[in-house]
Image (cartoon, rainbow, N blue to C red; front, side):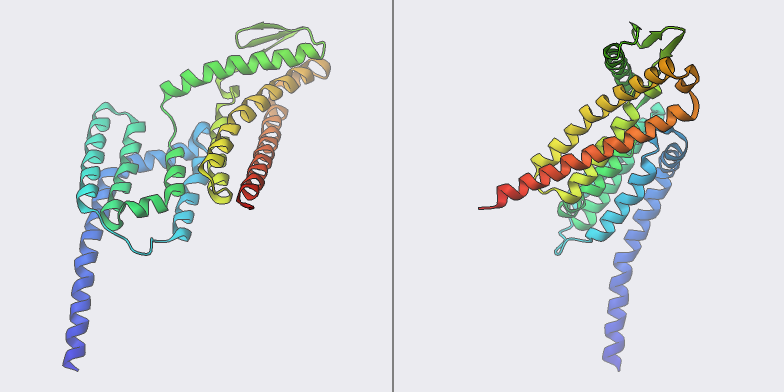
Length: 289
C-alpha cells in the first residue's frame, strides 16, 4: 500500500512539473497577446475583407485537433526559446508602432515557438495546413491592400469594358470608370475582386491540403485561383453593365449587384473544385505504374 502511495505521489509530482510551466506559458501568452487576438477576431467580424477568418480560424483549430500529435515528439527548447524571444521583440516593436499586421504575426510566431519548445519542429510541420490557414486569416495591411486593389480595379474594368464592347454596348473607359449611355459604372476598391481572390486562395490552400498529395499540385491549384478570381470579377462587371444598359439602370446597385457577386463566387468555387479534381486524377495517373 505504501508503494502504491509513493508511486501515485511521484506521478502527481511529475504531472505538476509539466503542468505548471504549461499554465504559466499559457497565461503569459494571453497577457501579452490578448489585445492583438481580440482585435483580429473583431476584424473577422466587422471588416468585409477579413470575413473569411471566421471560417479559417476555427477550421484551423479543428484540423489540428484531428491531425493530433506526432508519434514521438522531440521538444527543442533552445530553438523554441529563440523563436519566442524574436516573437516577443516583434510584439514590442509593433506595439510601439501601433501596426496590427506585424503584431498579429508576432502572435502566430509565439504560438509556433511554444509548439517547437514543447513538441518540436516536427509537430509544427505536422500541423502545416492549420498554420497556413491561420496566417491567411490575418488581414493584410491597408497599404498593401490599396496597392493591390488599384491594379485589380483597372484590369477588371478593362476586361468588363471589352466584354461589353463585344456585345455591341457603347462603352467609354476612363481608368476604373465605365461610361455607358445615361449611366457611369464606378469600379470601386470593393469591386476589385481582392476579397474573392483572398478567399479563393485560402480555399485553394484548404482543398489542396485535404485532397492533393503533391506540393506541385497544391501550388498549381493556389495559382489557378488568381486567374479564376480575375476572370469572374470581370464577368461580374460585364453583367452589371449589360443589365444596366439593356434592362434598368437600377440593377447596377442594391440586392441584384450583391447577388451577382455571391453567384459568381459559387461559380469560382466550382471551377476551383474542378481544377482540384483534374489535379487529383493527374496524381493518380502518375502513381499508376
